[in-house]
Length: 561
Image: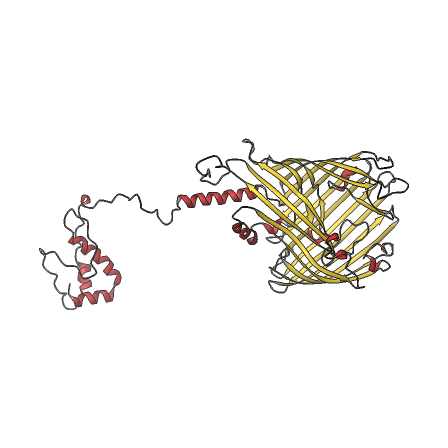
């Protein structure tokens, strides 16, 4: 091939060069030999063949080559595929054995998280798939899970003293934005266990990432509480251990999802975030079985106990120092994850028995018992991807009417006492609430609650109605203006009181996102409240004990993960 033709061909088509060079090299190979790689210079024709002629006038060498007949391919036997080398690496798109094992381990970790995941509380919703949690697990190399909740800050009343909350007497909750007069925190440490290869030479991890042996979890929760009235004082800070429990699952071959647990536990609590009200909360110490398959739903059965001491309220002179022991046993049966009406439903029946001990004077209360029925319907993705709607109806008698595993208390002039329940006492409670995002710039969380209580022997009623809303205007992705207004009406025929408390809060916020539940959040707030004559002396603490309205202001951070 002449230099002039070669340069002309390269200049016109690099693609043609890549096609021509291999063919030329194959033509040079001797019979029975594999074709040698093409040389970077122009190929040399075999001696037995005449040199290629120059292209005729008006015709380029590329056109001549395209018109020429390609050389015949070598015999099939002459080109044999080389056997794959033992050291040859797999194709780039095929994972190695180590990568397959790591992927299986990752899937197993996800399955264990799903096995022990909680989804009944408000704080459970945004925690799923959280980047912070994922990063924490990477840092700790899956050794331990760390979760938590904290709110802290400081506020003072308009009268100059430390802030006190505005809550209506007879109301089971209060509207919390700019109305929490304490620092509070929870630190959660959890560990999942899965040891399929503990007694094998290999790691025992199935290639498909399934669980082939028992799984377990141990969880510890430490709580901290410090009211603003004792700000920073060590003797004013209480530390608790509300959770210390273990659960083991995948031990029944016919029902691998079933788990057995024992310890002290927050047990399937349901709450309303805006008012921080856990309306169904049988948390305590005990044990049970859960996640038993029941068609499309699941079943759980637990025994949960509670114990405390208190003075007796029914003696002529209640004395908080003359105490007796109280114990309460709750047998909790519930069915959950029932598909219904665009969401899922949880129903439960509890039997509760309360026993009273003997005080120093030999007084002893009567043992009581009662039943409760609970229904909670949850609609996920309500009006937005992260919206949640929750509706509940509850009815209980005797000591079961609290809808908790613990006791309610009553405050008398001489002190605070456990409220003794009568078998004939009853309560009905209905709640409706949701949180959702209405686009990128507005989110909202309304609440409506009603409760009727009858004490039984005196046939006296206590009524409570509450309605409120927290709208948030997201000015930017990280700056927002939160408002909260709520009103509580309460009537107590025993105390002979009836009245209303209203509360308004304005809170500029900086948060990590523009969602209703975006946390961490830092806020400044101003809160005002007003209340009826019957509530004077029972709202706002010492600063407002003779007033019918009050004001407070401060700053607060809130975070959970």
